[in-house]
Length: 168
Image 1 (cartoon, rainbow, N blue to C red):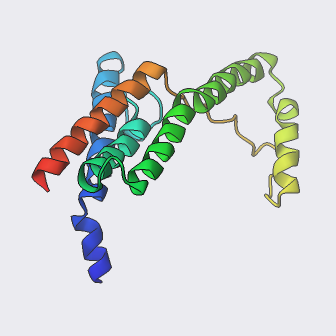
Image 2: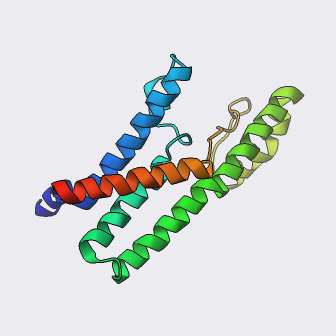
């Protein structure tokens, strides 16, 4: 039980929570200016300005540097994980999202959704997933991040780390 209490008093955990919520709230407010019909599901959507992925990983990384030392092995590990996640957010996830958008448009324009989604259906079945005819939906399009969105999220995360370091 003490370990659970430690979890809720950890400045590292709070830095992650505060950074994530700050980034998602900022995105939601900015997106709401252009689209008044946003829902709570949109609040948790990926992509957009600033990146909650980078904010959520940079905050504890910087906090580790501030508390444990920027020359510590723990900070070095945190920095590598941070670099991988930020790189992934603006390159791999972005590319996958762009391809997903184009593929969805092709499927919509071709009309025969069942035939175009057959390879996906077969792949899922080969992995033990039961897929009934007509049940397969269009692939979900998820946006990745532009480098500027990742940089803004990283700056937000660093600012949150400084704030948490002062408050906790």
